[in-house]
Length: 388
Image (cartoon, rainbow, N blue to C red; front, side, top):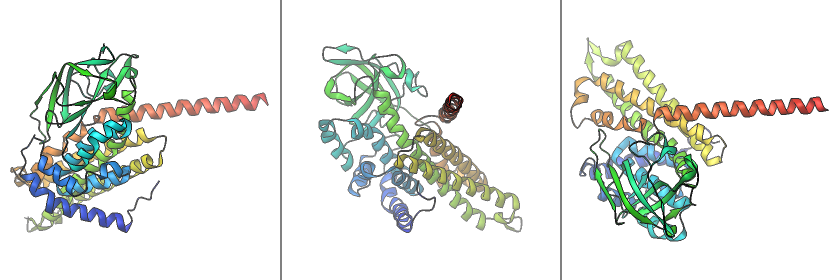
């Protein structure tokens, strides 16, 4: 696993990305409409080569990319991340034809991708998906709904997870690549607290064939988890980037804001709160990097580490932004203020790609599974010793 300190090259790269986000990407992002896909922003991300990094980077590099962009322009970070989330299953599980058709377009920022997993009654419990895909000749017909889907209904293609029924639970789910122009596929935008493009999809007997399958029939849950194990630590990186921006704004504000004959930073209660914010941000950052390093090394405990990283980082970001608003006072509640923007942005990652409660469940199950395995190994070793 890599050391916890970034090397000079990585540090310089992150600084360049933060400057690029603030100077080049933010002006284009600000011209977009909240809740809508910003295609000019995607085109610029493609032109700058940043979308290409989604397909060539390891987990740690992806985390550094997302953290740095989030520090300077959350909209650019989110636009990039959603492209990766929707297209990663195609990269990892798609056929040559699927990859050749869609990935160059995603890299260039010309095609918008979406990851369609959640449903009205199956958000956190991904194995309980109800979107039906009964057989129809050599293919299937998709019927049902998806909800809270990023980039819907404006995406050009969707990675859709549906129940084809090979087995109960997670074993009966198949992943499909569904172009947005398929007959019977419709959608509508949802107005959310965060300014992200989110929508709902309706499938009315949408025809899909063997050429649309990602991976193998009945193996779609593994496709979904492969994607989430990579992107969960980087959701944490997104949160860390926002928390760092809020922390820096708070240090500047409290150092210069006059209060009670001095400045806010002179008050021990304020200084200690800022110290707590900084400590939590650093702890979250290190856990994110550790989880990304574990993914890059192919460690066996990646799901648990990824869950820990997302859990701590997103909860930390909520804490830091909330306290930053409190220390800034009423000015932070004004529309257009950095912290007003971050306050709306920071809430969603605690739910996206597995709510905090799901992450705790993943962590606990892995801990107890490890305990059971360890106890079984000890029992087996004891019996072998007695037999000798």
